[in-house]
Length: 304
Ligand SMILES: [Zn+2]
Image (cartoon, rainbow, N blue to C red; front, top):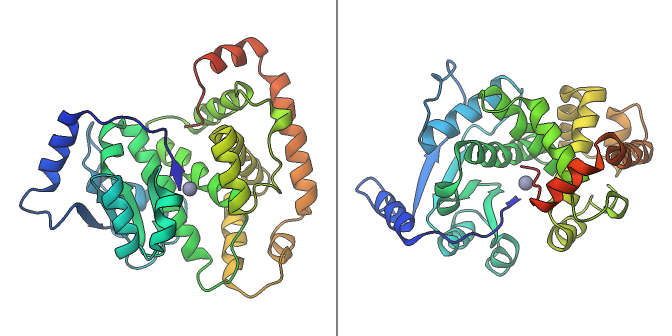
């Protein structure tokens, strides 16, 4: 999932969107896409690609360049507003109705076992990089599910969300929108400029379950959770490679005891990695000048 700050949609924009969706080719308050992964490389995207074109290009890149697997059939649904998305998550997404509103009402996108569910009204006011990032992040969750298909447990939330943002920044690089190193630098600056001092960030263990993750995102903002998780996964991949992380997530499809998948995949104990990452995170404040952090704090940094 990806939280977005709420923003008013201008009536004009909403009217335009409703008109598009209610056109003769649409069957209801959403558009449905069958995502294509195979075949030749899709043609280069123009300056303003449509949703279908963008989704297919991103899925192809993830599958062919990042070696991420997908189910044979993957669908994306784009809804006109909050109410229709909540309804769609229950009727098509397989979510429970009493949970959908509480968990997903602020989300721009949600991945369930039945596909990617998106807020068309949010996407309409996003710039192209934002739309591409949202699609890549949610498609990464689809691939993570496919990797662990059949298993009873899932990797820690910080690994899943950090990896989804890692994919997001890789895809933006592959599409020529923004170099990966620049995205990583932006995240590091956001962390240093956060209103919550790094010393008070939750540790990775706290961010391993859904409750801790959601709680910290709501009370201290996405920088303490999403930004931190991305930096942790970026470092994990820098040290051991992305194929290793794919292998690790794939191990969850097999029966195993808690902690065993990490130990089998990585030569460093989980606790040691967490501690070394924490030290590195706290060093960021020293690596990036405080003045830069202060300025960024004033302009509300984001890890997007
Ligand atoms: Zn997510």
